[in-house]
Length: 119
Image (cartoon, rainbow, N blue to C red):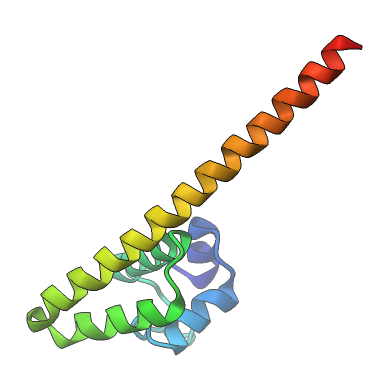
């Protein structure tokens, strides 16, 4: 796939894809005869994983650490698991805060609806 196709498929800018490649989150993407990036299914899987993890709020630094650990092989499985467990804890905490915010918004909206219904 071309960088344009990958960009469209995963709703990421081409600059973001190049950045992820430059900092090592995505392995160096093969180039076709014209010198354009040619993403494989494996490359796309990595892009999808990175996008998912970023969407969950993982900082770039944590992802760089994780990818570095993956490159070191099976000896780092336990460390990788712990890193993901810690990130899951942080995500759960953010989700709880978001739930509280949602409940507060719903309460305020309900109050305004009650006020406008009386008029």
